[in-house]
Length: 202
Image (cartoon, rainbow, N blue to C red):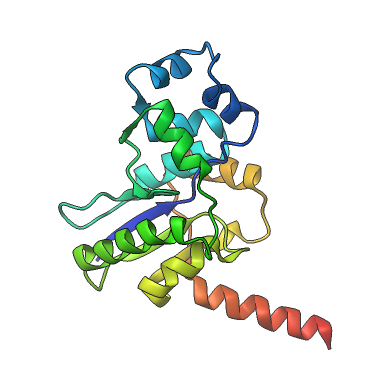
């Protein structure tokens, strides 16, 4: 039996070159113009900003999601809580989201995220797997999510030791080949990393 699963994606970093092309007032791309006028889907915006890593995460999550009925299987972690890829955002929305520091100690980031995670837990039930496509090297994502989901939070095993570009390429290959990655509980990964560091320090 295939278990239900929901993917949580870390956001694209808008501070880079592509992000600044959208956040500025003079961008002339079709997407920049739409952002200033009627808005554009957040997933499309983040794909533009991160054309390999976020694109890979979104394509992979959309292909392999298996959410419970009535719940979105792909959700993006942002400075405004969890948002769906299809949510239309304007330039002012993007600036507001991007201006919030993604930091586990930042209450402006944590309050909406904690609230959305608790609602997701209630709606998804106890059997749904929660898979993070993002970094576990810092606490900014794993702290709030594990506080709500504990060992139900999973992470792709093959992400370990890879940089963002390598992860993006791998995810796109998985989509093309129809091969899903193996997942491990984040808590297991953290214990393994601590044990390895301890052995190396002996």
